[in-house]
Length: 448
Image 1 (cartoon, rainbow, N blue to C red):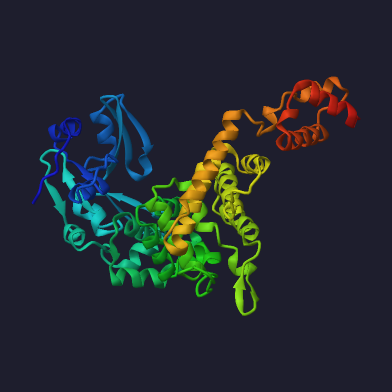
Image 2: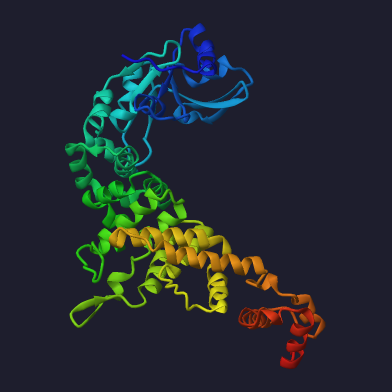
């Protein structure tokens, strides 16, 4: 069997363990990815030494990070390493945390509690020898995600493992073994007991993978999606007219995959997932054909609801909502310069690359082509306005709130509204963006 090329620093880390009659193993993803020829420096360690023994091996250089569950952080050569004692676990009454933890001396017993065979591979840091008690290497060769032991039990221990199966499928482009998939279908409803934060993390990892469509389709096929993103399933079977190749659901999945193929950042992939989610609720028949007028407005509202439900940050919510709302922009060369400036004001200079990436993914999902010429012309016109120094935000105005205060206006909402009005004037007529002209306009309009 192939041996893991143990880095020198990890071999040295194992020295105190070996010298005192213990073993230290690298487990999980790093070993799996080595066998797949992928890079992975996210190391997980396990040992037969009990937590107090680990602390004794590195006096003054440990932190009891999760000592209740056997985890100690060791500071070694300027690095921090989390090392967990071999353990077995009791029942999972809450579907997430074990009711009890027992420390053991057997690596095999420790690996039995892990989720999937491909994540239960271990490597001796003393010799580099790889240990496989559950057929993980064979499953790697078969490109298969398979639960260890009885799948039902693994998913009842921690329901998030069901999403992790979909995530590893999308990350590695593997299939989920049939009995494992059937167990997910039977237990899908238990995902409601998992926190929104943990669900969000797994969903974002699926979206960030090279094959997000695979993971998303597995969420739907396994029954998990109706508990996580029920709004998305409303698009299944809803046909679209024109050049669309897919129903609404299929189009969304294709747009997410296209955004991944374009190597777009997570913000774009998330917007691709939600950009048409309001279509089913906006659908009306006109002459027997479906129409989706203003679906972007409904999609924005649903996106905000969904991302709030997933406990996303305000920045994540606002960026995604903006991209969803603006994804239907329809540029033509007939746009006036002021229309280009208004577009820039609405979207924000920093969001233009994200919106263009979303437009490319959306068009690719429709019929496989992108109108790059139109995007290029709009990009050139945007750059021209930027090079001209056009006022695109209130900060670009030649006067500010202090100037308005000198005219007698008090700070507050009315001052903000007045500055917005001046910006509107300047966007329409850039030559007005001079201090004296703006002060004159403000005097003529009067101040409270």
